[in-house]
Image (tube, rainbow, N blue to C red; front, side):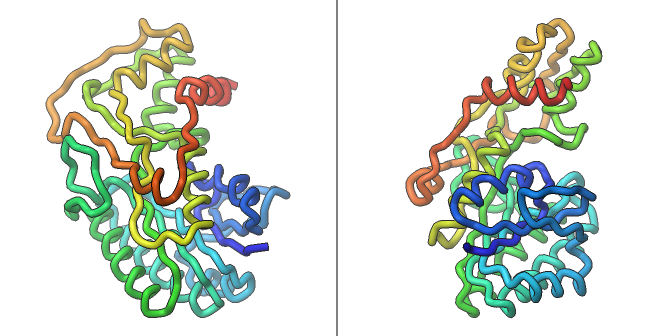
Length: 290
C-alpha cells in the first residue's frame, strides 16, 4: 500500500479525507491536535510546530505521499502564520529526506486578487495579508525545492467550504445553532455571492489530485455561486424558521461575487463528483441538531 501522511486530519476538510484515500489504496497516517481514538487510520496527536517530533514522525513512517492541510485561517493577519510557514518548509525537507515522492499543499482563494469573473489559477494575486504573503512564499519555495529534489508537487487552492464540526463562528454553524435555539439570525452583506463546496467533496478532490500525476496549481471549487441570502434561506426553510432571518445588504469592499474556475479540476484531474447541496444540508442539519 502507498503510505500517506495527512496533516490537519481532524480539521474541516481533513476529517473527510480518510475514506477516499483508503479507497484509492493509501495507508493513511494522520496528524492532528485533538485527543481522539480511532481504528480507521493511524492517528498521531501532535502540533506541527514541534519540529523535533515532526522530524521523528517522518523518519519513522517514511511516507511516500504528503497532504498538508493544517493551517489556522481564522485571523488573516495573525503572526502565527509565520510559525506555520517555517513548519511547512521544514516539513517538505523532512519528507524528501525520508523518501517522499509526491506532496500536495493546500492554499486558498484568499491568495487571489478578487474580481467579478471566475478566478483562474494564473490570475493576479493580492498579497496584502500575513496569511496570503506566507502562503504564497510557501508555494514558491516548496515548488522550487520539489523541482530541485525531484518531488512531484501540487498546490491546491480551496474556495469556500462547509461541513460538520466547523468553527461555531463560521456562517453554516452560526445559522443552524441560532435557528435551533430560536434566535434571530442576521446575515450581513447578504447580497454577496460565493463559491461554496461541501468539505467532503473537497476531500475527494484532494485525494484524486494526490493519486494523479498533476503538478502545479489547481483550484478546488464548484464553479458556481450562491448568495449568502440564498445559503441562509435553504437552511432556514429546512428548519421551518425563515421568520428568524434578517438580511442586510451592507456596503463592502468585497466584489459582489467570488467564484472559481474549476476547468482544471474537471478536465485535468477528472473530478466531477459534486454532491447536491440540499441533500448535504439535510444531513448536516441533522448532525448539528442532535
